[in-house]
Image (cartoon, rainbow, N blue to C red):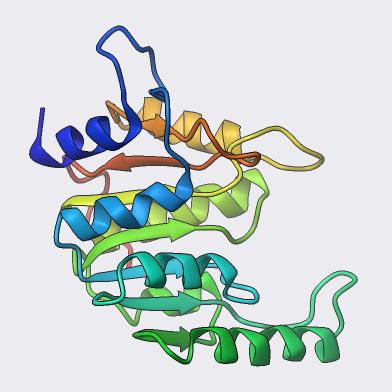
Length: 204
């Protein structure tokens, strides 16, 4: 077991007879920034920040790190431009006291801003369809270094969501083990410590 997984097991009280995905007996997504801090992670990305509420929680727990908040803040579905602009302004206000950098781009547009294996962690909370989630995982896990953490939000079944299917397919297809799902969240998060590369050199 790597030192990173040892820290995860400690914070989430995971037992050796657990089955994939490991969930342990305690811990929520707010435990993740405590793990980032203990492991000395200093640079990460949140994909899908909206009003910045979870970004604030991460920065409060680990104020020394630099967090890039990637979100296009563009109108979509039943969310008109005026409403999205309000979300953007609120995110700016909420994150102003911290080392947070707002990147107003789509997930795929922002990939080119970060070198492969340049991040300590990424947390994905953007599109919730199977294709959207899988595309985000495939793109952003490349940006996280070996020993960093790849994760995301909303690992549960709800209308038109493909998160569980996408995460399960990616972890099985790339022999990701161990990997984890938070227990003490209404909307659980999934994550894993990156032990090996899951890509070739033909994509960003």
